[in-house]
Image (cartoon, rainbow, N blue to C red; front, side):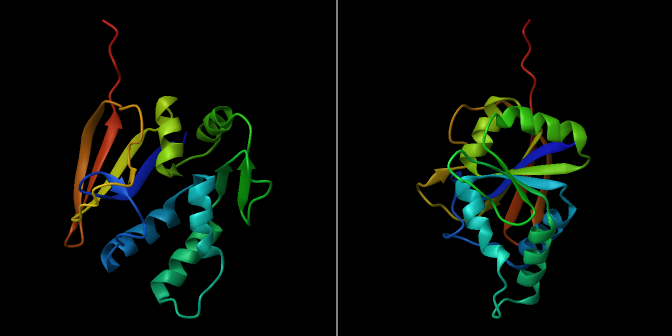
Amino acid sequence: MAKIIYGMNLSLDGYVDHEKFAPDATLFRHWIEQVQNLSGSIYGRGMYEVMRYWDEDDPEWTDDLHEFAAAWRQQRKWVVSRSLKSVGPNATLINDDFEIAVRQLKEELPGEISVSGPKLAQSFTDLGLIDEYRLYYHPVVLGGGAPFFPGTRVRLRLTAHELIGDEVIRLTYVPVEESTG
C-alpha cells in the first residue's frame, strides 16, 4: 500500500514560492533522489504546468538539472484538473472524483506517492489522504504568498527532523488521529 506524502520547500513564515528562493546543491541532490524513489506524483493543474518545464531539455542545464529532468520524465504522474483536456507524457488526467482515484492508487501501488501544490494538498488533507507531511524550511521570510497549509488545520505529530545542507531543515510529521472519547 502506497503512502501519500506532501513535501515542499517553504519559508520560515510558512509560504511556498519557487521563484523567491531555490534549493542549494545539496538540497537539489536530495530532491533528485526523492523523485527517483517515488512511485509517482499527483499534481493539480497549476503545479503540473510549473513542472512541465522539465519536459524539454535546455542546453545550459547542469548535469544535476538534466538528472532531475530525466527522473521527473520517467516518473508516473497523475494530474487532477477539470479544465485540462490532455496531459503530457507519462501522465494521466483525473478530472472526475479524485478521491476514489487516489484511494485506488494507494491500494494498488507500493512505496510513496507525492502530492504537489498547497491547494491540492489541502483537499487531500480535508479527505484524510495524506500520510506524511515533509516541510523543508529555508532561512527566508516572505511575508506573504501561497501558504503551505492554506485551509483547515490538521493536528500533527513530529516524527523526524533532518538538516539538509547548511541551511534547510526538514521536519516530518504524521497526522494525529483524533480521539472521540
